[in-house]
Length: 530
Image (cartoon, rainbow, N blue to C red; front, side, top):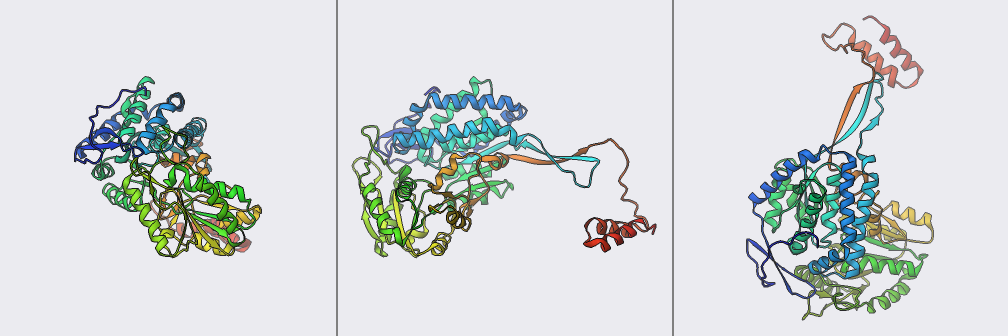
């Protein structure tokens, strides 16, 4: 890659020390090297450097910010093969998924922000209502330094995703990537800092602190002005607790247990292939994975047969050697979670149609693409996030039951509805407790419409990424009332005069009273001297 490489030392994959992260390739278990762990003092120093850099950046024009984002876009396009190779080494995903799941969304977010960011961040005129002699507007000022604590499932996209709106809004950013992708994260951050430097700006606008939970906790407690957290519900609670010390605002993008509803009139091939995408893209390691496939009885058997046929044909392994469909699981801990949930489901009565076990154990962290049929809402696997290549087939008798089952979990991130009857699909979609719904598509496609927001309800979090709301979440939204006409007369409140209460009561009745009689009485009271 273009940027200089970090200083590393080789280390065994199983080693763990308090001052080093020993990184391995999950697809091959080959050691990559070590990355230094940042202490709480290092975190505070990074935030302090970011604050200094932001003072100048916050005064730049939108045109200048666009120029820098255009440089980031050019870098991403020009170095896409190298980025994909680093993503593969860091996460074990396939080359094609690295390109389509990391590079393409990043480029689209950059394109949208370059084209639409200023429109959503420039001062916005607001009606001044009764204050006709005044003007009103909303102004969108930089917050200062944004922190982003991000997971391991998309090593490149998870880094650049918060960088783009942070810079467009005039902020600096300090990122804490997962320790599981520390190797690739360090390289990506160095590259982006180099882009900033080449554009004539302080590279300290973009920084990363590396480490384990202690480093993330230190960043959450630091003097940052806003936190974006992407990760599990449990860790999200810890971030909120830490952020409370400084009353730092937080946007939480947590887990999902997305429902994928297939009505009896759905296009079978369309629905099955979308379910394959929702379950097996990135080996199911997606917050918007289609974790529950709710299929109407009338189409259930045909859907199951076709999904099984396609899943059995999937090729799994390292795409650096062969053309494969599905890669590795990024962490050995997640491999254990998937294995335990699948075993529990079978014990509780689910029918295992294919997969259900680790494969290629001599090579890396692989779990076979799996289909479980006759899954019921009471099973553990129906309520807990799997985050793996597992398709859960659940039988429903009608639309009402589909909605009840879909809403019967603690999560509410994304969802999908499939029906040839668009009115029926929209009616079902409107009843789903989710932050996003796609009709006749895998729910994850909403991310590619960058003008839409991204986020959930219930235990899936609060606040929004992407779109206008995502940009503005990184701003101090300031309300301003200004002079329309320089009249200069005082609005007398003090001292209180005899009759003020009656006159102002008259004003309220005149403006807001119901019916002519009450309005007339208000006008009469307004005109009274006492």
